[in-house]
Length: 191
Image (cartoon, rainbow, N blue to C red; front, side):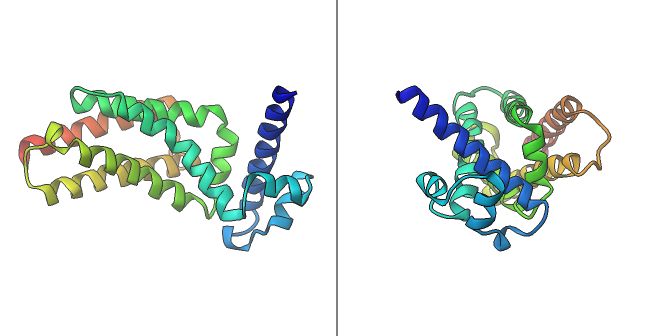
């Protein structure tokens, strides 16, 4: 019985997330109501409230679930920054490939800024914790470089989902990995 309940909970969350992603194509996040989501997902309000408190809670869970995998991958990394940048972009690619259509809808909506901010924060948090492993210069300069890299990485994925970059996700991953390694290795030497 527990497995059926577990599958039902997963199914309900997927329906809610998919409904929210669809609705984000039609209107801004702050205009979406629980009623909109339950009607689109074809579930009752009780099912919604069994999983989430409100619409911001759905977004928060989505962001936390998406980025918990990235945090775990980063926590397991050591060695030169090129190892970290490779692991980061490959993890992002893996997450996106799990449900490309869903993430495309999210990244082409008013929720994209929340996802981009979280990506920047995850990268920034990790690199600040490991600053002395990768950088020997001025702390403020390091923060600027990390923000620049994380913001650029986030922007690349946003542009890719918007169709502005005519390359595959794998090509984007390879180019992002090379760019991150090049920028950070150059920054560590020059600054």
